[in-house]
Amino acid sequence: MKSTPAIQTNIPITIAGAGIAGMTAAIQLKKVGHNVVVFEQQSNVGGSRHGDYEGLENWIFDQSIPEFFTEHGFDYETLTTIPIHKFTVHSEYKKPFLVQSSRPFFQMIKRGPDEDCLDHQLYVQCKKEGIDFRLGEKAPKSIDVDSTGSKKAAAYIKGLNFETRLSNQVHLLLGKKFAPKGYTYLIIINGRATLATAFKKMKNNKTDPFENSIEYFRNRGFIIPERNSFGSRGSFSILDLKLFQRPFRIGEAGGFQDFLFGFG
Image (cartoon, rainbow, N blue to C red; front, top):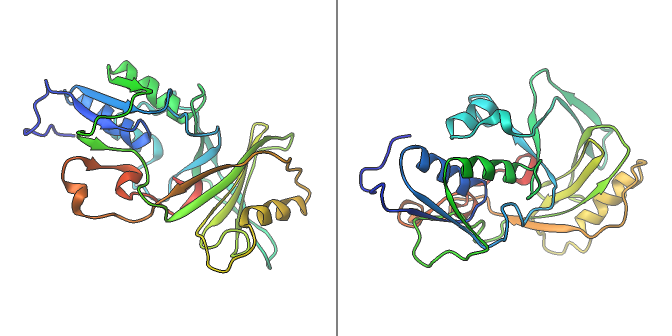
């Protein structure tokens, strides 16, 4: 990454939002000599997440996942990831089938503030580089980089986490009944499970896709407890040309999102 001559390295670059995009921008800028201040209104990094599982896809990169992280300034070897070589695909009217590959489809990670979560581990690497984080502090009105998440909701996610004795496994559930224009996933890793539905709201849809997904898996023998669910939202489209002027919008703040596993 080359330094931008128009920005003086002795003037701190301010970033709003300590999500993955914000921290990636911060560590890249720091490594080429800029001072960086990251403002995060949560009291800790990853505080808006719930320890839920997500997949880092191999499908969308030319290089491997470790190479991708290295290119963007992080040490992949310090991250807690689990390669997924197979998963089961379900739909309402067809028999489930297994998809598998010798190359991992994706690397499973946890999101949240705990030590084994991607958010916390990236934060630790940023701190070691000397990046200044202002946790629990709202960003000033004038910033250089906006990484504060979606500005509008193009899709929604609803899910829950629970403990289980089942072995490690991943399931993908498709269909309008379960996830209109989206997907439901059930991920079980080391005794912890995430069941979540990513979907678009549909007119005249009087049923709850997430409840339908819970019922589907319960009918197939999965024990899914009654728990408080979590929710989030995402945006899938580039917003406008404001991306290319200060403050620069990155990550979901700029509409950069994908339709694949993990909602991120």
